[in-house]
Length: 109
Image (cartoon, rainbow, N blue to C red):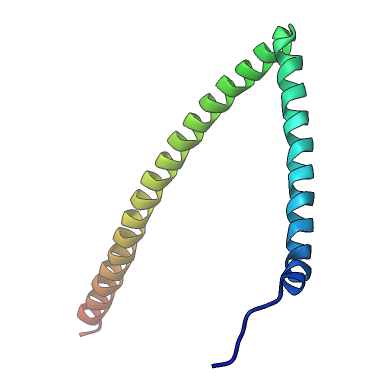
């Protein structure tokens, strides 16, 4: 069997781009963590007005979401009702045409 082992230096060279990308990802993660923690500090540092506005907006969003769900349910019910009425109209028009045809046949005889 052939020896497929990669020498240590070759392995280090092969893994170098992966370590570099991992290091860059850790740097980006560190920046994101710093931004998040600074934002938390701002909110915790007494910016209660902003916090209250956020809570108020979240409540409004929940209300609007509930209204949207209710409206979607109404639309679904109305769509079903509309389909039923369309079906009835088709059959009523067909029946009227049949009656007209029979009436025409009776009057021509």
